[in-house]
Length: 460
Image (cartoon, rainbow, N blue to C red; front, side, top):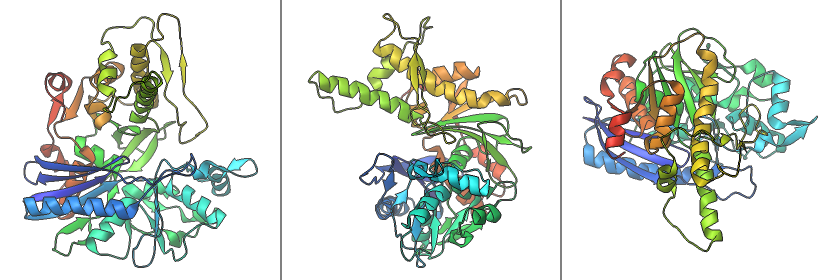
C-alpha cells in the first residue's frame, strides 16, 4: 500500500506518494503557492481556498494512481494563522510567518509584539500566530463570526476530513507563541495577561493521532509543523545528527534530551517525549534570491531580458578554491525574530574583490555563517556526528554544500528523496495509523546521498 503526504511550503505546495514498506517515493506533484497581492510592504498573505483547491487536486490524482492508500499526512507553515467560523470555513487570508504587521508601532514606543510581550512577559516574535492575532484584536479587524484560529495545515486536514473543528498538534502550536513546550500546553495565564481569550485557540493534540477520514475512508493525520516534519523525514529520531534545512528561510535543528536554554535557539516539541532545539533564520534561500533579483535588474538596466533563473550562472561563478580577500556578507536582510529592525551588510569591499563571483560566494558564506553562529553555543556541551542537509536551497546549490561541510567540519549528506517535510508527514501518518509502531522505525526508511555522490549526479 501507499501513503500520500502534503507539505504546504511558503512558496510551493508539494504532494507525494510513498511506498509504506520501503519509503521509496513513487511520485511527486507540486504547484506554486497562492500568494495574494500586498498593499503594504509588511504584508505576506496567501489564499487558503486556492491552497485547498490545488492541494486536493494533486492528492486526488495520486490517490487514483496509487490506490489502495493507507493514510494521508500533512505538514505546513507553523507560525501563520487564518480565521475560521464554527463550520470550519475560512474567514480570512492565511497570514504567513513572513507577515510583519505585528512589528508595526503600537503604544509606548513599542510594536504590537513588544507591547504584548511586556504585558504578559511571554516570548513571542512578529509572524507568530498570536502576535498577528493581537494586532487584529487591537485594531478591531478580527473577522466577524470567528470561532477559532488555526494553521494552514489544520485547515487542510479539516477540509479533507469534512470536519468543522480544528485540532492543532503541539509541533504547530508552539509556532503561535505563548506555548509551554515542556508541558505541551498554551500558557493561558500569559495569554490572559495580554488580553487574549484562550477560547480562540483550537484543541491540542500531543500524540500521534488521526483527525478523521476522507469521504473515501482514508485516515488523515493531524497536521504537523514543517520544521519537525523535515527533521523526521531527513533523520528520523536521530539524536546524534544535525539537520540544516534551507528553503525560503533556514533552520538548524537537532534533538535534545535535557531541556536547556541556548541564546538564539528555540526549544520546540518533537514527537513522543523528545524535543528539538532550533535556530531559525528569516533569510535563508531568500537571501540568495535577493542577489539573483539584483543581477536580473542589472541585466534589465543594460537592455537584456533573461526569463529563466540565473542561479546556475551564479553557482558557476563561485570558486571552490580559497578566496584570500573575500567579501564579508551578513544576510540579516529581514532582521531576526527577536529584532526585525536589524539589517544585513557587505564589508571588506576593495577595488579588486567587488565582483559578481565574490558577491555570490559572500552571500552563500553569509547564509552558512548565520546558521553556524546559532550552533556555536552548543559546541561546548554536545558533539554531533553527522551533518544532513535538506531543502532545495541545499539540494540545488553545490557550492553551498561545500561551504556548509567546511564550516561545520563534517561531511554533508542529503536524503535520497526530495521533499523531506512531506516525507516526514508520511512517516507521521504511518505512526498515527499504527502501521509504524515506534518513531525509531522511520530511520529504516531513509536513504542518503553523500556530497560527492550529489556532485556526480543530477540533483532531483
